[in-house]
Image (cartoon, helix red, strand yellow):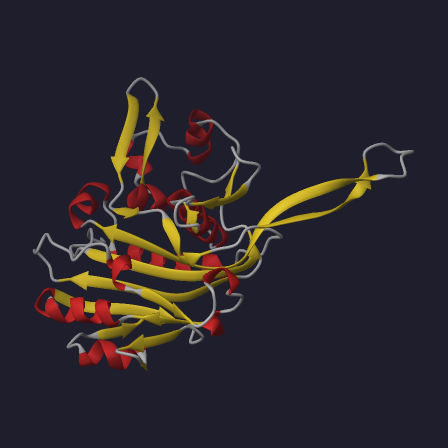
Length: 298
């Protein structure tokens, strides 16, 4: 029987979007979410989890939150959940937690061991308003087609940070196998966002820092140790070839706590150029030079 994972870990995930809406706000004309002070794009953790869940479902996994417009009681019956233990058969409950109504027992609540902060772009972005004609007229005899309106960002490099808590995993039973499925779904699910509003979502870099068992500790806020470098005005960025990612502070932080780190798992697409102390570096070599065991994810 698989045991709950015993090592705390942190996740850093970067992907970019082109001429798309990373996460529309339904309360604001479905415009991309923007931090008004920094003009950086925002993507909620709910959006990322939706991507992951959709990928799991495409691979035949059952999930609690399916994206369907259905109430919790109906969903519970669909999945045949009759007890608190039944809920833990679902991978998203084990990893993300859930509130599930169990008849005559009230709500069953689990706090998931994996939590993500809102993702943000590493630079200011431009929001572009587009208007076009609809495919059909409003009435059968009408000649004038209606118009559609949408808002997109030409480019955004988005960074997510998350933590996997081994203490909560003891309660939900989340396993190391579950964690590997999470990382795979995060990468592949982002690449598989092939819809009109989500076209051109490209995963660029994924890191999972796994700490040694029993420490009950982590570095924290890994996203604050990476910095985007560009020679053009931030809002004018249109392609990953126009940027570099400075990972010098991140490597220094890793080196400072190398005795506490068991390994760093990673995956990269190769187009995002990584820089250390002003020079382009290969990720595996940079991690190894910092004294870390680097493990490439499949």
